[in-house]
Image 1 (cartoon, rainbow, N blue to C red):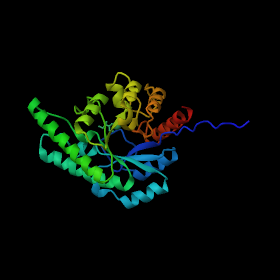
Image 2: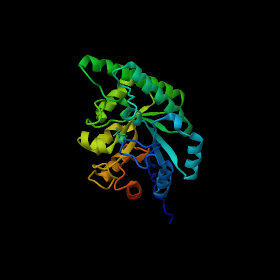
Image 3: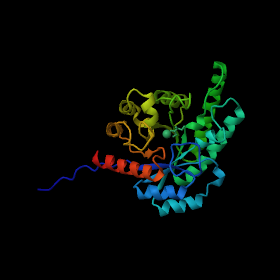
Image 4: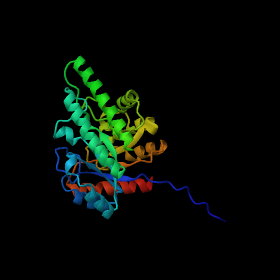
Length: 283
Ligand code: LER
Ligand code: MN
C-alpha cells in the first residue's frame, strides 16, 4: 500500500540579532565584531542575521554581501535604535529638526535594506513623548507624519517597515500590541507590520500566545528573548505555546533571537541556536 507522505510543515526561518558597531544597546550579540557574529550565526544554525546599524556611512555593503554569501546567511532586518541611544535622533521628538534628521537616517537605512531584501525596524528610534499634553499631541502628529513619509519612501524601494511595541520602561510611544494596531490604523499605509518582542510582551501583555493569535496578518516579524532577556529557554516564557500561536495564524516569517550577550556572546548564540532548532523540529 502506498504511504501518503505527511504534509510538509515549513519551519520559520531563524535570525540572530548582532550589531555592526559597538553599542550601548545591550540586547545584541557581537557588537562591533560583525564577522564573529556572522560566523557564530552560521555555526549555530541560523538562517539569517538582523543587524543593528548606527552610522549608515560606515556600512560597506559590498563587503557585507560577500560575507553573507560566505556564511550562507540572509539579512532579515536592520535594527535602528542606536540612532536614538547614541545620537539622540527620534521620530517623536520635541523639535521638528530632530524628527526630520531621524527620518533622513531611516531613509538611508531603507536604501541599504533594499539591497538585501531586509525589513527596517522602527523601535527605539521612535523616542519618547515629553512635556505637557499639548506638547505631546504636537510630537505625536510630527511622529506620525514622519513615519508616513518613511513608509512612502520605503514603498518606492520595495521595503517593509516593522513597528515594534516596546515596554513602558523604555518608551511611551506604543507599548502593547493593541497600541501597535491602533498606530497602524492611524498610519493607514500598506507596508508597515508589527514586530512583537517576547521580552516586551512578557511585561506588557496579559498572555503572550493569546495576543499573538489576535494579530493575524499584522504580525511581520518576532523577536525571541526569554523573560530575563537571555537566550530563549533560559527563563520562563512559554515558547512552545507561542510557536503554536504563530502556527495558528500561519506566521511564516522570521524568528529572531535578540538577546543579551550572557554569559558571553558565543554561549548566548549557541544556547539560542540549539533551543530554536529543537523547538522548530519538535513542534
Ligand atoms: C529593540 O528591538 C528592542 O527590543 C528595544 O528594547 C530597543 O529599545
Ligand atoms: Mn526587540
